[in-house]
Image (cartoon, rainbow, N blue to C red; front, side, top):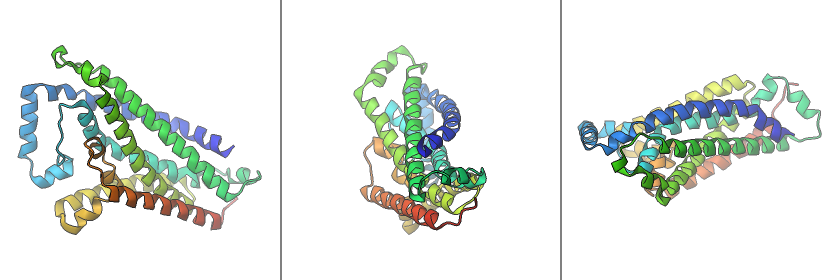
Length: 278
């Protein structure tokens, strides 16, 4: 009951996010033909080379990327879209538990023979399913949009898109976004367990994600120990381009898995002992 109720309550929100992100992805993919034009590519390379090392890192140009490779180009643009996806995933977790008190449906939940442990479990599983469906739609739309990119026939883009390598790249990007999203979702659950307002949790989610982005930028500028710390942040560990070029930090993945477990456990502990208003 709670599983399906939670899934349905997030369906409209998920569709809205898919529509908005699809438009953004389409606009960014429309720039891909420029990378196949020798003159435009030369201008782009000159622009990137003119940037200072710090600015390159802040803008995400520090990785060795072949922008003419469609898979790597898609991974490159998704490092920016990943920030918005992180907000969506954290809002899923952030509003999950708190909205029952805000909307006054908590009494209805407890009128059924169910424990708090079961409530949290079903909501967690439901939101994970929502997030997976969301990513599948985004990846499917991205793949579909790749077919309608207006590219000169001489570029033979059909071979690029139909290649096994591009499909594997799409899957790698999916896995990367799944990893970072689950980290932010688990943190969102923690905030939701201590909050009584889903609107407040949504606002905190946006601020928290942008705060981590600012920390990442700051760490890249100052370097040293700070840089080593921010390299363990989910948006860095699960950066899509790192997964596509197989530059994955196993230590970073392990640390983020531990973070997920810790925040989910804290969610269970806090929610089970929370004084709920009926």
